[in-house]
Length: 304
Image 1 (spheres, rainbow, N blue to C red):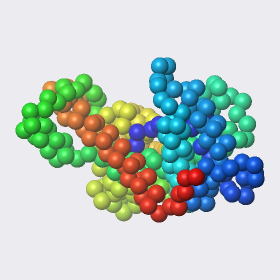
Image 2 (image 1 turned 90 degrees about the horizontal axis):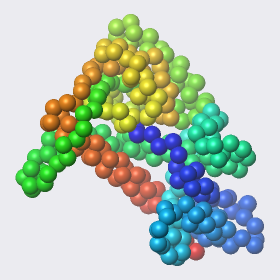
Image 3 (image 1 turned 60 degrees about the horizontal axis):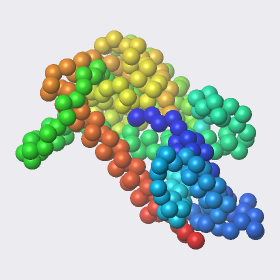
Image 4 (image 1 turned 135 degrees about the vertical axis):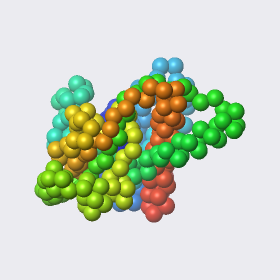
């Protein structure tokens, strides 16, 4: 659930929005067809110029290779965006305003820029959902990784002391503003039951729409930076044994039960935490790769 509030489309100013065929002018040739949308040569040229301006100083890359990379990214972004819209995932006005507030250069954003920001938020929500469902790391995975490294003579990082939290949660998904209202109503009813003493794990198994439901909502041990900001903020306000009031994130509405806090201070704990973070990052990258592979396998993509 690691949060990345700004996608490359916002950071670099890339115009990654593929256009419906009906909106393409006859004078603007097609660079790629991506399912129901197209990417025009003009859009690629604009994105290529933006990417070139924003390359790190001293970077050497041929225009042909940079164009290939930019167009490939535009195709991927279009596929993810279309998937998000099929799932009715939306970006609220408050979310768009939050991105603009974090970037002074976007202060006077017009409708076109706001639409591009909205699309970038939807793309990131789809990606984060895939990561959230596939990047959890079990204790046994950490142990196996360490054992293999030791057998192969690989030196593992010592890691740094980090505060860790052990928590459970219940999630009611909300991919649109309309769904959010119903999700909030549902989560508040569940919260009332949890506060009255009903077993939290049982409620999670019954109601949660997260992959952790079968485990009673158990999220295991996690450190700061591993969850989205609103979720972490809520955890920081809890003491062990307490249950949070309903919290909204980009995934929907949650209630969180904090079970324990620990400082991963021993050498073994620090090392295990470093390994856990490494595996989680690898899983997150693989989740994005798998998402794109699945979208490409069922899509029509024609690069001109």
